[in-house]
Length: 219
Image: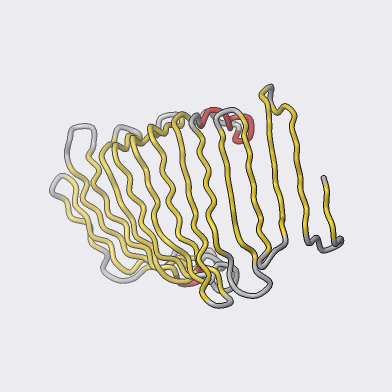
């Protein structure tokens, strides 16, 4: 570990090697001073590969990219306490907007399974504005090849808005064990800080039985 300008470092470097859960671990992080401070990170452990290169100006938003890949989700069972099969990748791009920072992110899972729940493919794509101030979200979730408790198929969701008023729309493309479709669309407003939700619309059908929400409901 090397650093200058403490207690608020202007430049620094951290290099660490060792073993974690019986596998080699390598971690390198650096903070370099220039026209804009630059933070970099490299980490390797089992099938985990993480990288980041981000500009941190004295004034203004962050810019740069970060990525993470985990070829075998079973590698993190020591931390989760559960066996999870599959692979995962995630990327984030930081975008300055004046003094604020935005981020666009892509997350994907392949052949993910835990106990009796699995999905051939799951993706999250979207962005967040004013990440460190008053964040607002806009993103999509897509599930393909879902299998859970005898049901299968796909589902999707869209989220938008600030954390205290997050609009969520969920659409099901699942089928039951006999192949009968489960049509379901739900629209809700989530208040994450208060851990509450208002379900504004619910429409669905299964085996010819319609399900309709007559009036908004609080949860």
